[in-house]
Image (tube, rainbow, N blue to C red):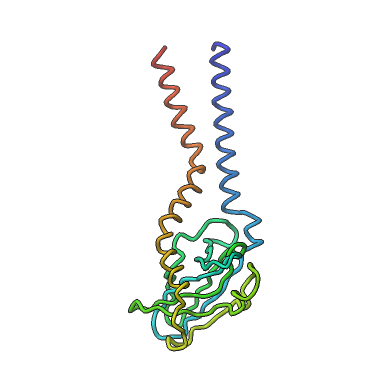
Length: 202
């Protein structure tokens, strides 16, 4: 085998090893990110009513903006939750919702029933009075009846509408996160194409 061919083969093997290591490092950094635990917290919502409820956590940023909360898929990763609105909680059940409180802190939870009516639950009464950002004052809240909930503020419903539109953006975020994991596949396809091209030219 000519020296140029051996060099090319070694280079391709080295490139393949690098692509595999890069994909593994990327996977570890997003799935098991140790820094994600620093700003992770959660709140448990108990549905004590007799009907299913749909929850959308709303927060306030350090600039005072009302925004959807940065929900995460798992406590040990930075993977965003794809669907972070209308989280269903059946009657008599509870749902623990995890989120990143670094940029947006929990303030309210917009609650929707089966009829499409919306109310709000103030999850942290101090959220809009103190400097952002902090963990919730209470880690558990209960919804005892629909009548206990108040009419939603306009900025809460606006944030809810923005969150529904943001679903498409979150899907693209997941695609961006997952693309580097396929680096070895791209390399294999490229190498096969290059090998076939070389064989055809001989």
